[in-house]
Image (tube, rainbow, N blue to C red; front, side, top):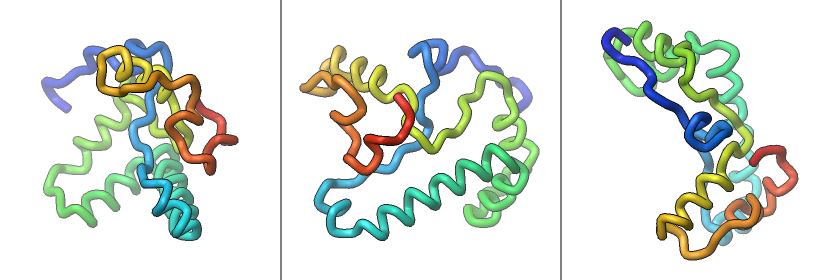
Length: 128
């Protein structure tokens, strides 16, 4: 976008990429609705794949569903800007970020691994 530039990014700050989106739920909802959770995970993976593989189509869908009048070139330029974080469907940088939140007092317990803050359904998924 004209007049804008990347100053820094999570990779430079954390030393690795940071997830730009994650799904949040309670254990209770997760256990009571496994099919819904799996369908939501699959939809997120599909959306991430579309953003990565066909950003123009992803922007078209976004503009259609949101009614955002911004010209399509603007969000496309952002998605194509070097230094703008990529989209992942696997956790990235979450332990480092959670450790930072612990050190600054936001979290009361220091995480040792992703298993400390992700439900068991993603314990076997690659990521950090």
